Length: 531
Picture (cartoon, rainbow, N blue to C red):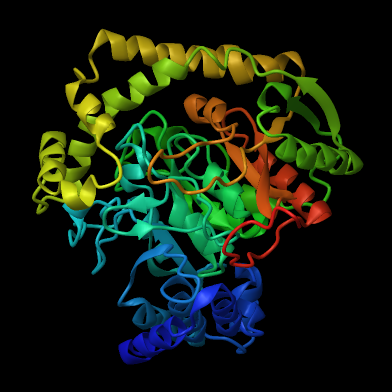
């Protein structure tokens, strides 16, 4: 498919008007092409059997992006396409034909969140106009790992600008460069953030795999609200090198996919020791562990702590999760009601740490990966936004950027005390304590609330979240679709101690296989409350 074909497809899909027309466009783009909904293993098997090529698979996803993302329902999940995607796919097809297969991701299309550097023709912007058109000097470590694994980087996904660390009144899923990403399950509902585009793209089957990033909730929350699988790995399992940062003490990239099996394959490709990221020196386990964990009996005999202090924010969500607890029990899990202690003791200190790390971490990234950018410092970014307020600040401000600029740096006593407080109450006297005392294999709870109506006047209004304990501790967190309420997805979370990623994947997979709760989106204009 050349550029003219791509434009033609987009214009044809865009001619369809209205909600019913949007739904028809979505269905027409998908047709009976079940391979677009399939996972990496099935797609790879068809390539190996000669029934599919990397080029044809990429072309079909590009056609779906044109019909659904850029026209029709206009999900707006993809901020930029890789102009070299089809060339790369053709090269990988030639390798396969010559007998060289790099692994299970050979020829598989993947979308990367637009804060992950790619040393190619695409921008890496964090959704900001300040970095629009700025090409990274080289690949992020995770992007290089994916290329080595044979994945086809199809493009970049939109995000909440600066990974949702710009304003105290932000609208998740919106960036100055990319606009608003919409929830495929109900177009007037929010995708949550900040990996909004990756979540929506996976729900709408715009690629096989996607990568998001999380500081606190930015993988698991959009995964839950979009009805997909998300994994926030143990801090240090996946390198942070080349990812536009918020805070090194909590940032990590991770998989966002339609199945736990795909998430395990993707995590195996992403994980690895990076000399440029000291946090990865302590990696425990092997990449094969994540795929080997995919066993249908992964819940048998597991003691799961039902974190009751993370219920109660939504009666509709609670009702869904209570039913799913019976599924866990039926698969051999032993359920124990618990409360995660001290979760109220790091609310303020978490923000203190994020703000203190933001400026030095961002300026280090700009120097290393975007040396030609017009902005070099946090002060430059703030000034840019002020100069371009009509576009950048039209809906909300930059209070977090201003607060980060005012912090004294990583040697400040207040920062160091806040970081120690976080680790004490999230790790030692938080997750570690309850799991040791109750002899648990994992904690389970609702991932978060239902997708809210996007509101450019009042900003976001979340309905509860289980993200902070694992995020602040740097521990792994897996969310899996658990059903729906009012037609909106609900996620169930599995959280564990450091380096328990493989174990959590095993439990999440066993639950997924027993429940099969994921539903493809209907691209409805809004929720039908009478349904």
